[in-house]
Amino acid sequence: MKIRIIVKLSVALSVILFCIGIGFYGFARLSATDRYDDVELLAYVPEDCYGLFEADNLDYFMHGFSELAYASQLDTLQRAGLIDDVLDDLSRYSSSSAHGLSPKMNHLLISFHAPGKPEMIAYFHSSKEGKKQLVEAVRKKYGGGFHPKKETYRGEKIEIYPVAPTKYLSVYSHRGVLAVSYQKKLIEKVIDTQKDHTSLLDNEVFSSIHRPKSANYMAIYGRTASLPFLYDAGQPHCWSEFDIHLNSEVFYLSGAMYASDSCMTEISERLSDVHPVSLEGSFLLLSGTEKVDSCVSRVIASPFHSLFDECTANLSREASYIMVADMDKVAAEPEKYAAYLPAFVSRHLNLFRSFILSVQITKVENRLSHIFVFTYKE
Image 1 (tube, rainbow, N blue to C red):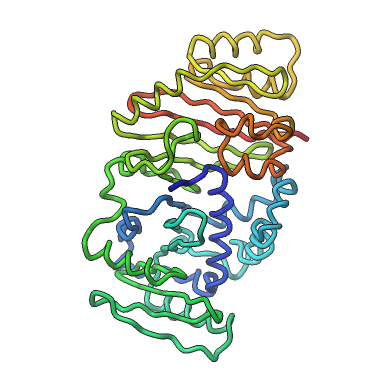
Image 2 (image 1 turned 30 degrees about the horizontal axis):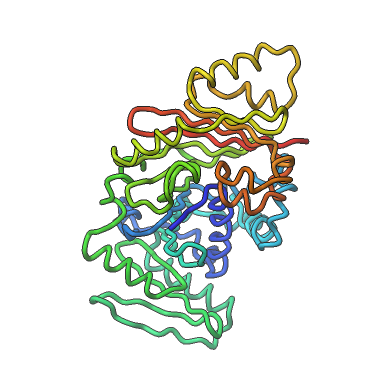
């Protein structure tokens, strides 16, 4: 089971489309009842999910994206119906409009349950009235002729709404939490999680990586190594965190990779055994703090700096591993660099040809801290 680094940014956006499709904005302004304000959404997420997306302010990220220098470059994602649809639809529901999102509805969790398939669950805080508004929004979007089917699973009610000839929306509400999915079996897993108290919060490695964040955050968590070559995918004792940051000229992912002690030993060995590569102005790969320090110091001391060199100079001299790649040049020989690039980047190189990717990984106690920076080449 795999969760990829940059693909999750795209998947997260596509999931927002999923929310639009079920009438998310029809009930977004309704806050949860005060009685259930402190209910933890993570307590409903099945422990065996392979990835998680979390955001506390969708308005903040979506409203500001179109102002970024690289927004037009990432518009190539519209072939997959992502950025184009998101910007067109979300802009109409920004905080400046009459349909601004409430703080409670701005907090969203998405859990992923089948690699390569749209099997996911969205979790919100919502009152009973919010659920009614959701149903009404779905009814308006897909026509008033459909009739919900109600089923009982372990004493809990699941409402199923046909939204297309072969597509059904399953809805479950409990203590101010609303869980929705196109797969009823996943809603049943949510009920199992709630009944048996076996949520993702009980996963020791995940709990060590999931910590309180400041306001306006968007983060991805997955059972994966920071980079493909570091560890075999889908290991149950390995989780990585990626906080998504959007700046005017760059976007970057920061976070850390956590694993059990036995796993971390193997990961550290792979990190230190990297064969160095230096292709001037196009690709740099280096591991070992002393080698990294020497390389970065030499670039800083150089009298002339290209954008590639500037990206290198901005890396920490205390890093355990660094990589800098001009994605336009890397695209000419993608198989050569596949082991050192996130799989989504490798598969969609044209999307990132206008960026320089710089990566640094630093060992800090029992985890590997990482930063992935995409610098836009004007």
